[in-house]
Image (cartoon, rainbow over the protein chains, first blue to last red):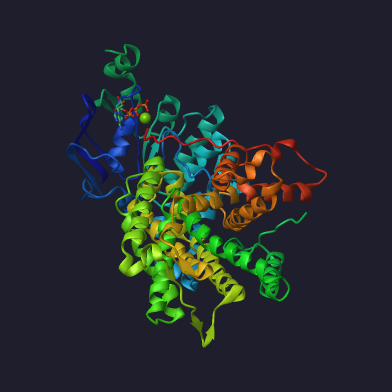
Amino acid sequence: MSLFRADDIAIRFGGIRAVDAVSFDVNEGEVFSIIGPNGAGKTTIFNLISRIYQPSSGRLYFQDRDITEIPAYRIAGLGIARTFQNIELFANATLLQNLLIGRHCHSTVGVLSQLVFLPAVRREELQHREKAEEVIAFLGLERYRDTLIANLPYGVRKVVELGRALCIEPKLLLLDEPSSGLNVEETEGMGFWIEDIKKDLGITVIMVEHDMNLVRMVSDRVMALNYGKVIALGTPDEVQNHPEVVRAYIGGEG
Amino acid sequence: MRYLFKTDYRQDITLWRHRGDLFWYGLLIVVLLLIPYVLSEFYIGELGGVFVFAVAGVGMMLLAGYTGLISLGNAAFLGIGAYTEAILLAHGVPLVVTLPVAGLFTGLFGILIGLPTLRMSGLYLAIATLAFGSIVGTVFQKWDAVTGGFDGFPVPTPDLFGMPVQGANGIYYLSLFVLVVVLWLSANLLRTPLGRAMVAIRDSEISAQSMGIHLARYKTFAFAVSAFITGLAGALFAHYVRYLAPDAFDVLLSVQFVTIVFVGGLGSLHGVIFGALFVRLLPQFIAIIRDDLPFGIGRMPGLEPSLFGFVLVIVILFEPGGIYGRWIKMKNWFQAYPLKRRTSFRRQKSYARSERLR
Ligand SMILES: Nc1ncnc2c1ncn2[C@@H]1O[C@H](COP(=O)(O)OP(=O)(O)OP(=O)(O)O)[C@@H](O)[C@H]1O
Ligand SMILES: [Mg+2]
């Protein structure tokens, strides 16, 4: 069954067709990767899904529900979480606070009860904390719990961003270049986590990635993009050996 | 040095980290309650002024330090609170009503200024709030039927449970009470989803949005809370000055609030107290040394505002953590002595975050 569906979506910036008539389905429980050269429109697709950009045409469906008109701040509540290519953490807050902000969409207490810190607020805070601790244990972040993000090394921040997305308890997770800036070992670690996220947590993943080793390691299906258009879609091997894909990467202009 | 063993998640959401904290805060309150029996009236008056400015500083801190919205219009909020308080009291409304109403009424203005400025940030927001401040200032001057215009507005002495609140002592205790309540509310705010949403907006709007935070709603909320608290400070200010002049609520006052926040330490409630002490005591200090300064510098007009500006620039350049940041570093140094590390005390570079989507 398809969890997410993009139907003929398009957006242009000035003269550039950043995403041009792209359609794809993502099945429940799979890891779906998007590859393509720089500027192909991969991140733009994520920004369309998380409703930061408005598509000029086409529709987006999540769990058979049309989400094309839903405002960006309600996307997390529906169960779609994301990470950012250039890490968008809350840099002057601690790791724990970052994870707790990830719990925001699960908060139910009212403004006044928060101002006077009613017992209900305390109870909910403890539940959020328990969930955050689960994620910390899952990703092995214990020793950085109370460290400011600004003082963490790049590789750890990448993991924290993954953790913050997991705190949303999403059904669909969008990972924008999870391995960029990581060394070989860290990239492999990221690969194992993505597998665990899929198998143990049952979360469906859409991943934008340049590292073909990681793509082959975790992906069920791969979609290749060039100049905003889909040029190939299939298993990792099929896509990697597709003549169009080879041409896009080697020939550049094709 | 004290090692903190955490054995319960609850430890991270209480307001004090350990018994020692509770003891010191308790002692501080007791000392503050006893001070009027010891010090002379002049010092009690000055301390009352510090409390009033600290309340306004908390309002500014929530907005600028925690939500990242710099406002140069908070003096107008203070003015609205002050006039509301004075006018209501003049109509015979009791203090227990006027005080919260002054805050709530000013809070409405916070929403009013918050809504049109939702899409602005940084310099543009500062200019928009500056404009708001000068409009409100003009209204205070021209609407003399209500505000008394340049003739000023005498603030009636309020009664609290049958006792007149007057003199340095009355203002001192009233302001102290309001300050403690405001600090408690703010501390609660900061340990709940509301406060975390504000911090999220400050650090990254785009990912705040993707975490499910409604930017417009929380920015408006930040403005409303800031205005509410500054309005309360305004009501206290009215009693502190006892005679409202329409030109008291100008941009220089707003700059003083900004100074409290930056000099005290961005993003810390402790910093507000340090900042308020600094802002209130600097003029006193200038007054003392004024006659001893060479070349007649002491008699130059504008000495005070330029000194404020100078200190603000120095702090932003050399100690972005403010006085509170410096204090924490010193405390760590003494606790760790002699195991010091040079890098612990080096200035932290803080990089401006670029506004980017990709
Ligand atoms: N907000 C924007 N305004 C103008 N142009 C944009 C904007 N966002 C993306 N683009 C353009 O759209 C095209 C696709 O960009 P996108 O970021 O999606 O590429 P990408 O596939 O993620 O590339 P990379 O691998 O470098 O991350 C690029 O030409 C980019 O310049
Ligand atoms: Mg990209």
